Length: 304
Image (cartoon, rainbow, N blue to C red; front, side, top):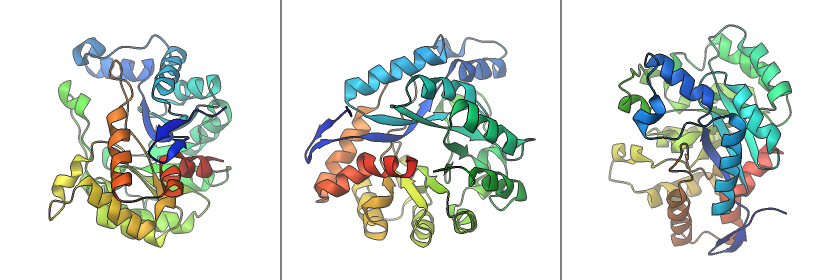
């Protein structure tokens, strides 16, 4: 039976499009960058004993907040084994994408193996982090491979990229905003129409550009995750309700994906994000079907 949540529109099956999976491999990678220091203790986070245990903890957390399903994001390059352990243990609760760098050798072969062995659904690209253009031939080569699989999904981080835990650990973050404009996604989305592309955080400060690309390309979706602090860059002081209003006016409710940007324990699931977005959708007069689409059905549809 699906997990249903009580909402102002009645019971809705909520699916979260944006949950980070901070695995043991993730903490090991950070510790190596900090010369072996105990990064979990420095951050005040729980260090999971295994990917399976972390997956079980997330299932319990989803159950507690009545979230039916989540898209897990493996948050260090090529950490497909960790995400795969979660998906294989709870195939009815999780899908997964992993951070991929198309510039690394054999990125296409890595995806083929990850799709087959770890049951990932796609990749998450960070052009500003890894310093490449979406027009790069290596990106196109990876997309060609991904497009050959059923229901592929590719997340593309655009706009401002600020990683709080790296700042707290005093680790460098050499991001290049030249590669952050969603406009660069248009050629890929037009060429690879079988891929569903997701731009997180409403474009992360490039809201206008994200809307333009999504309006032109029906296979481009926006996710609603994070605190959306990028709104302070918007002229005229647009608030989150205004962002939702404009996104709905341009795209309608079928191409917005609810996301919480939940990540670490003991904080766990960020229920406030869900509550705030439900309140805004209600305030905007969104009907029951549109609310169900945004809060879960859209994600389930593109993953079928």
